Structures are given as C-alpha cells and as structure tokens.
Length: 96
Image (tube, rainbow, N blue to C red; front, side, top):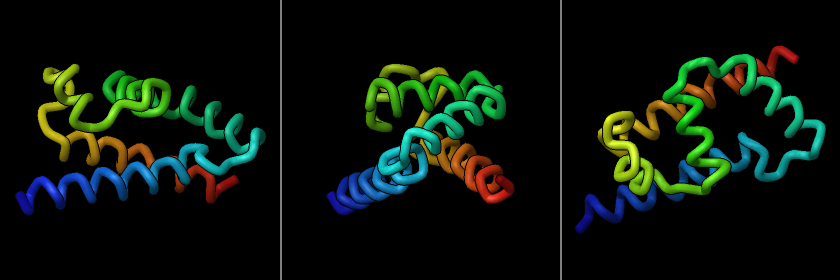
C-alpha cells in the first residue's frame, strides 16, 4: 500500500515538473523553440515515442508500460528516460 502511494506521488510530481518544463506554462515562442529542439535533438525512437505518448496522448507511466511493454518494462524506466530528455532540454535552453 505504501509503495503504491509513493509511486502515485512520484508520478504526480514528475507530471507537474514535466508540464512546466515542456510547455505547461510556456508562451507560444517558447513552445515553438521547444518543439524545434525536440525535432532536432531527440533522435532516439524510444524517447520520441515516450514524448508522444506523454504529451500528445496524455498517457500516464502505468498506461505506457502496459501499452508498450517491449519499450518500457517499469515505471522507473519511463521516469529515467523522461529525466534524461529533460536534462538535455534544460541544458540546451540555458545555452540559448
């Protein structure tokens, strides 16, 4: 029970954090720059799939691992890949 609560809390925090980093409150220029960055910097197919599932289809990590078990075996995999993308995006945006 505690594990499930912690997992849900981590999902909520990651979603909130991700939304602010990936356009949740961004203006249209920032969203355009971010979209351009994603198109050029995200070349890994698994990363592209995860971004699409998360931000276009609004899927939760649990839904993603159920729908794509060959790409994502655990919720931790989903968060690890998201964090890897976010770190690169933050680094790139600091350089602009």
